[in-house]
Image (cartoon, rainbow, N blue to C red):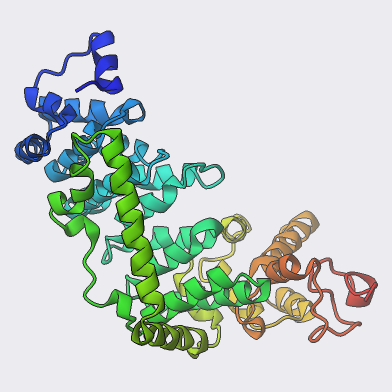
Length: 420
């Protein structure tokens, strides 16, 4: 029963008072099952809950499975106090810690709803720029489970717009909410992935598009979520490792690897299975997509920094609230001609307190132009075009004497088009 984590507790004088918690360090399968089921009957606020959280907080020092069983028990207790500890477990090298923490958090959010979301959202957003353990991928799961919750949907939409690394999995999550307006978000993302040559992301989002539009794929039929399974079944493979020597564990790994290879070989030779996969891939790749509609898109997307900044500037200038950033975008999303946009600007916004205010408004308007999706380009914005092509070369649609779509205010032939 030697365990680095247990030894650390002893060295630091940390005493676990409940013997059942100590039994989580046992190498006996029956004992562990019995004690976890006993701990699951505890209630929030108990000393046991605190001791379980303490084990999970130190999971990185655990060379056994005590932390895993502590995570399982906290999920069975529906422990809200454990949410920070469970989120911490996502920052692990081992997927089974993350999966167990995801299961536990999903159980907790399923019971208590959006009051759990504050910690999860903060956890995800802090890791958008630096996430060495891919932790936020697992943190999305409990949010996605709240399929009738508006806040959860809005947060996933925001992350779909911002989290390029996991846009595909987030698309699957969003499809589960059943809001058909989200098809416009997918339509835009599909266009970008197609033009960037990112086939993997393209296939993921196309598949999510199909699911949201009512297509049922074979892998999705009668699917049971892992967190809903009895925990003993869910973690049977880890329970079976208890008490085994390293030689026995290595032999077991080899046996499982052989089974996996045999399964793959069988699948590769299963003509009916391969035919079904090919059929579904063809359906995904050729499924008819809607045309991008700016009004529907604006009704479901979450405002980004540029849009929020433009809206705030409208209020500072004293325009009444009937004029919103969305009203402006509804027009400029239908045109790729910056000259038309400037005419719209001059015809609809004539009264400014000063020349400086007019100039600043022009700058804000140009920023908004850059990031607003265009119907003629199936949701691509001028900024998207710049990323995809290296400059704003909308040659097929922009005349040399028209204003450049980069929003510089210069004519195309004297700006981005002068070297073309």
